[in-house]
Length: 226
Image (cartoon, rainbow, N blue to C red; front, side, top):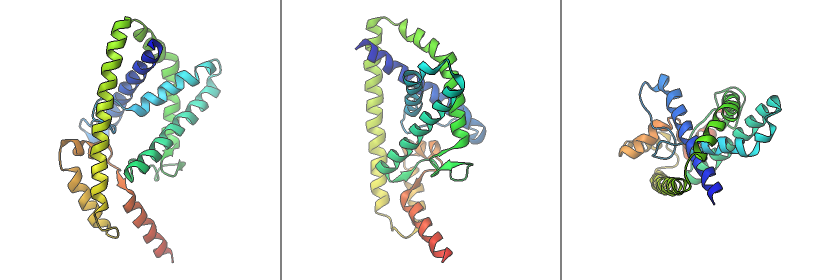
């Protein structure tokens, strides 16, 4: 049990590190603080999942850095692709879109991001993870229990709240005319500006696009080609 708790704490720590990186990277473009990620709290679980996957599955290949680099790219790209797909199926919307970037796969992953994940993964595995393990192993058993339970309750509650917010948002979008792109966009802006939590989503995912709009655009493109 204690080992599972340590793994969970590592997941949370990497999620927080990932959130910090996201905030810093977007600062030059946004010129303001943006709370990145799907959840309300200062953590991005996709980074926690990626970094944890790297350390648990790929640590044994550290003696082969070149091969390891490409394995990290494949693993992290797969996680990003699957996350995009799951969130699209759940909420009927595309949360990020790399369609305009070089060598992308269905706009869900792209070469530049995958390479960045590769370099970040190498840094995490060789330089950050040893300190993370040392830090977590320094906790007493009782502190490990308390932190694990507390953080689990926090992130689970956060997930429930965030999931419900976006589920209600998805249901309201369904009520909009399915053949009017302008009406859908107007409704999106109205809903996203409704309160502080939905405004946060708007800032965190500027490329958020309901599937309805994507479908309408594809239909119009086919008609124009004919």
